[in-house]
Image 1 (cartoon, rainbow, N blue to C red):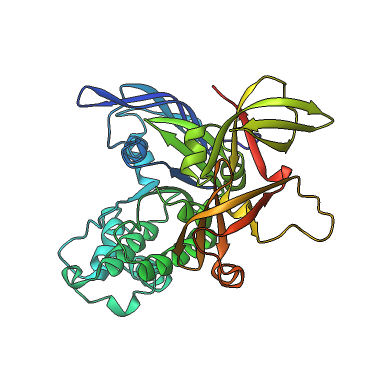
Image 2 (image 1 turned 135 degrees about the horizontal axis):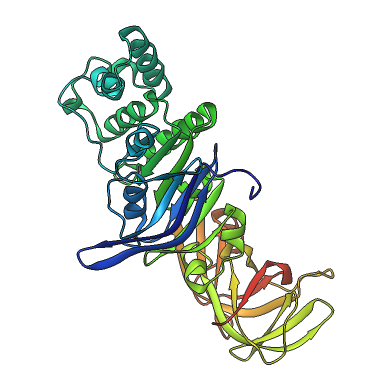
Length: 364
């Protein structure tokens, strides 16, 4: 993707609010037809990033380029803003009908009446609110209001749409339905998008690329698979749900396999380690297998540890099993597995994970 000309580019951007610096982004590139999920905990600068891109937050320093054209106040900024649309956490709707709300941006652009009706009708259908066309915006549910806000944004045929936590205020059924419709809208229209979220599942569902922010800075950018399975820092590992994170010392290394001592136990890991080096080990809980006995047949699994179940937490379709293996370990298993294994606190079990399931990086 690096050979493709960027649609939007940031260079050395900094933003300050209330005397404190809230953003420091040396570089960021957005390509056409790409959906980027900007993820991170609340207060890490995600919304400020979108506001800066939209020209709604003044820059302390740095430049924004759109199709290689520098955007500065009074020089190309109005044309640039017309290519953008932004959807906020709370729908900002006018006190009029759904139709008039969706048509608002088109009227400001002096689009002719026939085309307004065609575009509005298409977007009302796209977001499943055609039956609400004459309803007052004041009588909409939260999900209906957000659908109206999205329809209004897409009606202007933006080249880039900025979505700031668009699902955060919705109940789970409305949230899931809207994510599905938004995903279809982005793919069908080819609209380039940046969506901020602190929900990892939203990012996995929508994004071609995930960008992780911490304290106003980008700390990792990559495919959803790479960010989730190969986090660059302990912060990223924690945020994307690794849960099993340990500090250890490399004791041996040979032929693409190395051993790490963790709290008196030895883990074997695929890769190139350096003896006596301090490392951070990350294991996703879904990669940990829980069983009651040793396998009867030879197995390729190199890491098998006896342990005791200390706690069980059921989370919908899956269950978190907390283990004491001489070190704390968390496994994520299906409820069916929980039932068949008859697990309960105090049970003696075996926990195992493959050497290829472990991600390691040097301790900074």
